[in-house]
Length: 101
Image (cartoon, rainbow, N blue to C red; front, side, top):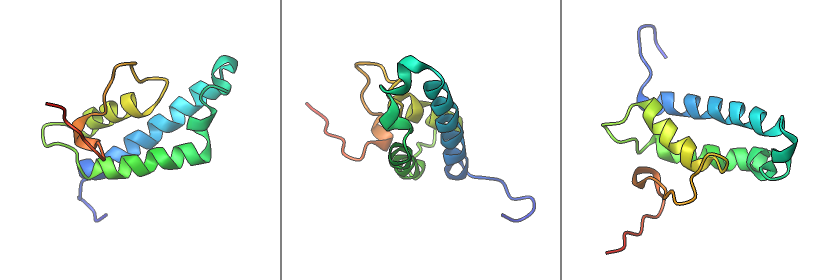
């Protein structure tokens, strides 16, 4: 990046998500009751899968969302311990979006 250049939402988004993955992983692995339940999510394979989804999502952030707002939606859906039971994938980063009439 050249001097004076600013980061785009697409650049900012993965940094925010990556930081949230690290913080969430520390939180989950520091509590014995969560160790086994969320092991798949904090494993290298789980993190890589989430980051793959984050890269995909970073290319589709709606104009009306900031990088933080998009990352917040992404993490609240993608992190199993934060996802609400009835929560559907936000339309803007769904790989396959099947709308029912």
